[in-house]
Image (cartoon, rainbow, N blue to C red; front, side, top):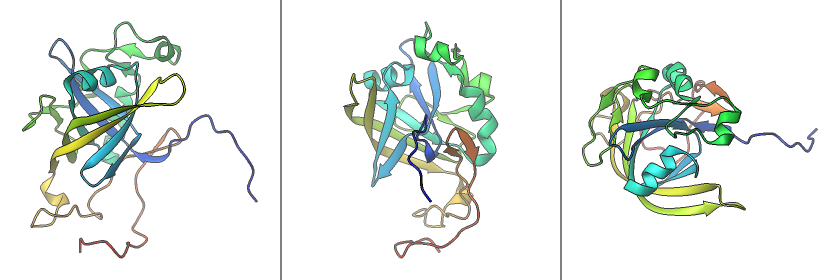
Length: 200
């Protein structure tokens, strides 16, 4: 039997993404988010417009999408209460966020130079996607959020995650961190595959 509900949040099982972007002073911002989906070589990012990440990528038109594995959930959680915005926006202050300019160090993560965008990659993330902004779309009444469409420039992967021809990520090797109603999860064992699957 089903009942009609009004959940306080609708993060119903999305992969975590750490977005690296460049601050106006040339330092790096790193922020976790979990509203991202890809179609082809385009990725749509759902971002609050009051955050430093949105301000950075709207201004510079580039970012890196770093995908952590399930092993990195503690590092991601160390980033969760931090903001690169100073002063801290009121709605973030209300849930206990604090300004932190040195996010990589605070989360015990390390930078890795990107090939074609200024923001660095996160060394510890098995998948890293360099991207440039294609369009920004306001979302909802009052436009406090935006859907940011980015075009993928490069995908980097740990070598043991891909086939020898580097054309496919091996699903059994990739263990993304999933944000599921504000709890962290990994994937269980494979249940099956779609008829379009190409990796062996």
